[in-house]
Image (cartoon, rainbow, N blue to C red; front, side):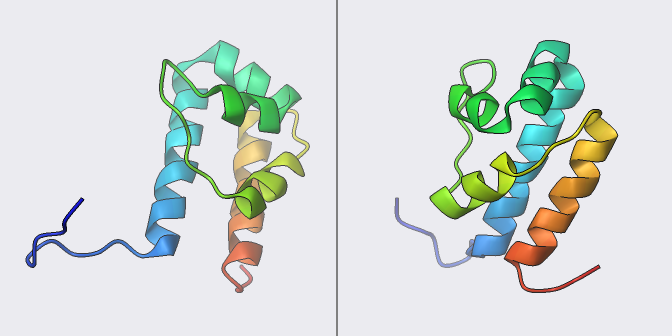
Length: 91
């Protein structure tokens, strides 16, 4: 795809944050996806949601797989920590 000169290029960080947002949105709107995400994050991400795939690199998938949460709120909190560690800054 060719980028038009007036279209801003998204940074790697913005692209990842967009994917994290898509994952959380899917979990909010689908109880089934949410339960899958809490039970086995790697599998839920690999399977995608409603025909959509999530685009994460191997390192992001590994970090996401390390999350162990019992609620979506807890998952989101841990995801924030994973993001911070991945971008080299702390909350």
